[in-house]
Image 1 (spheres, rainbow, N blue to C red):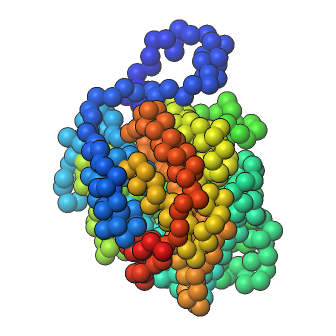
Image 2 (cartoon, rainbow, N blue to C red):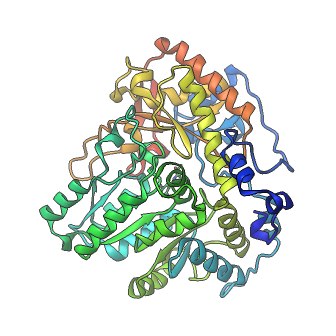
Image 3 (cartoon, protein in one colour):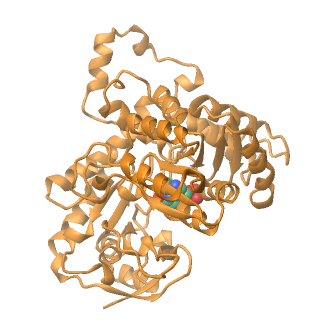
Length: 481
Ligand code: PLI
């Protein structure tokens, strides 16, 4: 962040390369910031939590946030902004058209992500909606490295069918493959042969892969996907929501990248795609915002036209000027190597603690969250009795910790048959907001998980008593069996 403001700390200038390398190799991930403002949290009693979760229909999305102690529901829009971002909020140019904050944001995205054209949106799904409407025709197929809830729904609403072409290891919570987000090139080739390239408007690639456990895709794999797509005239669209976290795994784990800066890796990563949808609420360290980026001028023109129907003018897309300023500044901070190392470091700290205590979690530890493996945690509760949903409710009851189900409820139903999907992964996500919680919060979380694990045999399942039509996990209600 200091570099973003044009400063270079003295100790970095005078330090020899050897010493710098040693410091960068140190194992501790201590935060490269200190706390200036705090937000008090409410502590509740077990009796209060029993009432709150029953009123919420055993769905953590339906809890009131003031009844939550440690909120690990999501890392989306829950980051703490820096003083540099807050200062930018005062510089909002709230003109309806042509806000200077938009031009700053546009230039920042072009610089760090490398795409030519930027369409601002209120958040990621706004970009998914516009992109899906433009590119997908009824009967099309969209291959991707595992589904994401809103992304797949927009593809389906546009008449497309999502096809999962991620490597098999991604569906195995215990596989230690370092890049479980990789696309299986054979599965992709088979689909192209089966349905024809003309029925595939684009390949939908996410880095990292949320539903697989925050798992990265390698640079080599994305490059190969892009080459294959190009030979068939198919576009590759990146879900860039957590691409900076993905770049960190490439830097650390992929040959040839450990001397490269995160910003350099991110640019190369995006260069193997033709555009991206983005939820700025994650990597970009803001509470609201997103964008669609494209290199094709005709698709851009269409997107720029459609954004005014759903989001707002093409120079704000549903965001206030101050939001765009904060997001531009958040992007600058997000690509700092010390930031991302501490961010993932905190996630890994919690994960390692649980692994040390033999709690079943998805491995390797991903970029933004720890995923409890409910199939191994609660083997006596079937998917039809919503093991992960039950476990999420129990963590709240135990310590006021809010987490999220990522299993059969999130997976929803097959759009043709109406049958439930039965995903291999039945998970509870402990998602770490960026720059928000302390190491003591992580310790307390680990202890609460351990306590629930110790008492796991006492837990029974749930039955669903209300099911919304779209994205049911947000609003479904349950009762104890
Ligand atoms: O929540 P949005 O509309 O800004 O973004 C949608 C979205 C798209 N792709 C990916 C990989 C996401 O993770 C994502 C949103 N994720 C949420 C809300 C989460 O809790 O993970």
